[in-house]
Length: 118
Image (tube, rainbow, N blue to C red; front, side, top):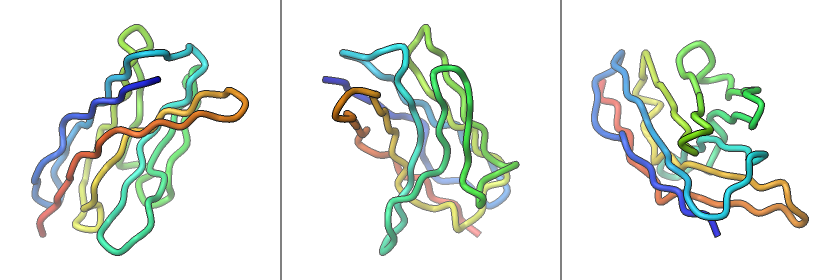
């Protein structure tokens, strides 16, 4: 089992910045893929950004050039630096960890609220 604990959400004005953190503990592997998803009210959960164990990243088009995902493997922690925030970024942000086992194991954090005021 893996536990994910998020921190860093909050209320910010449009144009501001926030940094989310997610610490993983338990039975983690060096090959785990980590990422951030978000879910706004009335919408489906969507991928925001992901990062592989080797540091390869991918982003949703809506956050490219504004958000940066990074990870500290020694601390089993993934970060999401969010700049130039927009009201449409308002959502609950969930940390995600995928283990490349068969079958794949997927874990979620409890979620952290990000609210961007206009």
